[in-house]
Amino acid sequence: MSGTNRANSRPLSPHLQIWRYHATMFASITHRITGMGLYFGTFLIGAWLIALASGPETYALLEPAFTSIPGQVVLFVWTIAALFHFATGIRFLLWDGPHIGFEPKTASAVSVFLYVFAVLGAVAIWATILWL
Image (cartoon, rainbow, N blue to C red; front, side, top):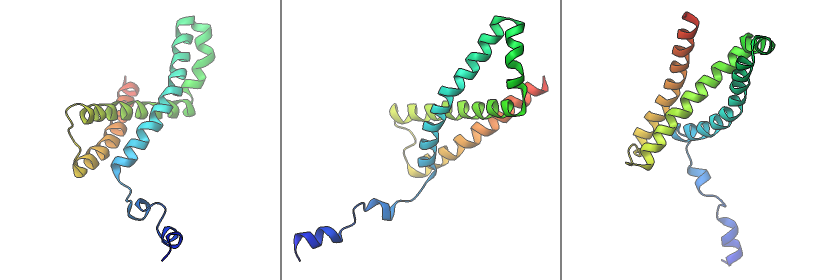
């Protein structure tokens, strides 16, 4: 068999045939996405704080955007992103520092927990806000 035929018969990326999607991979991707979302969402929070500090007339211009249903959904999703990014940041600190949680089953269980924590935490925060 010539070298050309042997090279053509080998797969280009063998890992693609054996790769399995898992919770840790999704959590890592979500961490990056939430980081980008927090970057842009913080501009909205900053605009709200500037309007609040600028006086009632300026605040009255932005208040409808934040109190509307789409505005509330954006803020709720921003809360989920903040909690998820915070929790995954702690996970990365544990991975980088004392090297805790690298076992595949532990890493997957923690990754699933991160999603549950972010959603339930956001629901608890918003329920508390709306309750008051």
